Image (tube, rainbow, N blue to C red; front, side, top):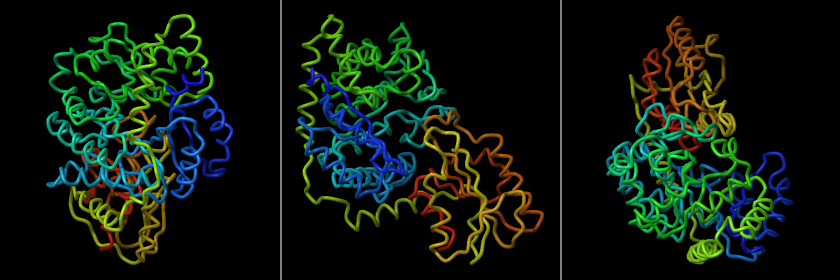
Length: 486
């Protein structure tokens, strides 16, 4: 039964108070179950590296250690290199070179951390402004351009011996529901998807992408049963037979409500493998899932030959990306380039960027706090960076700002799991309006710094001066702070 554990990718989450201590028992149980990999979430660079080296050393199988690295390893791990989101890189005139360099830095950073599997790039199209989960994670709305940039990212990442993972097949871009909260239903015809949503995935396949992550979205024109793509044999047959994909097929996280609300975890795991997935991402109870797989093998619900083929694919790719300490981490030049790229993607959407005096007031409007990943306060760098650049900063409520000089209003409106909306909430818009009015009453300039997609500027019409920083990642917060004082 232990070899069946290779279909499972367990999740390890670092905790601010306890580090990895709270996960030690779960890690031991997962290793004993023979899991084929782990997904890592969070942690300081040196602690992550220590953990991954121990995992590689003690696992009886060659592991795939993965993480969400769409915006560089700094998206997940403190001390790693943060990078702008895909949409921001795509906005540059030298986007192709920038995307390749970003992917190369991401992969080098990952290898240095002991990670050999990057969950990126996002191949979804940014079709709908109401989509709460794609946004700037995507390279854009044009299928051909997204396809080209996704292929560039995959080529550069895998050239550094890190597996890439194109997601989320067959496309999450047309949905207006966050699959972390419910199962979106997509009814467009296969012919429509073929000329749009599938184009980037075809390019990813042509680039030799190691893995493709399925969407937890129901595509009723392909599978009338309404099963999410991760659990849908017709959708995975489309990927395998029509598109000719021979690499790893991985489910999205099994704990997401799009699946968990309709299936118990064991049933979902068995259904995903029966549909054609090779790997099951982030089950809450890996050992229970392994037992469920064994039971389904015994009673004929799962085909032993099909699972053996899946394990062979996993072994091949795990061997291809086998981790070893090789000292190929990001260079000083890589880190400098990443900072410069973050500076370059900043966009002055409206008005100008006033110079910030030695003492200033900042209003924080955190529209991301409702997301499952928490708000900007979890990793805020904007104010500390201003302080490190010699500014005495006082954080104030917007409507009561009473100082002098420029009032800075930092609006965090990123795409975040579990947040459930794409735009800026009514409450946050009101807070911005009151802060601008308070500054105007005192004849003060106000500058809104938007940590979100540039199109959200239209929702903040009161802001005479608006600087867009695309996302609330640490690197973009630091870049925005630099722009205010240089």
